[in-house]
Length: 148
Ligand code: ADP
Ligand code: MG
Image (cartoon, rainbow, N blue to C red; front, side, top):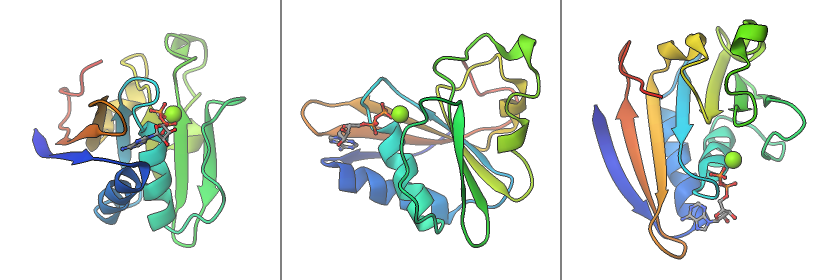
């Protein structure tokens, strides 16, 4: 279900929206973050992580599938599954360290290969709108309607 559609005109606007999203999250929550390369997924996660108390630089995971940032009240996980789509069968526990109690997880490039993500609560979908403009759709997920 679509909750909200927003258009931002710069990275700061997208970070602010991330902070708003973060304000509604609780530990154990998983947020799927979809959209083409450069659409602002990592930028949005950065804003959310900041709002959750992360002070370390939030950067795109490159040499691993994700980063974990410890904040005061929660650990913020940031996963980028771009390169691991389809590998889940080889290691079903791949995501286990990033999800679950005490953690709030943001997942870029989620896929249906990752069954653990079927519990995700929110989905953010970003798209390019020319220049620095981005359309950002916030959606609520219920079991079985998360799409691929
Ligand atoms: P993704 O993770 O989707 O590949 P990033 O967040 O890493 O995207 O990069 C988005 C790029 O687009 C950054 O260089 C950012 O500065 C730029 N940008 C320009 N306008 C916006 C906007 N409105 N929202 C988010 N990023 C923007
Ligand atoms: Mg990214």
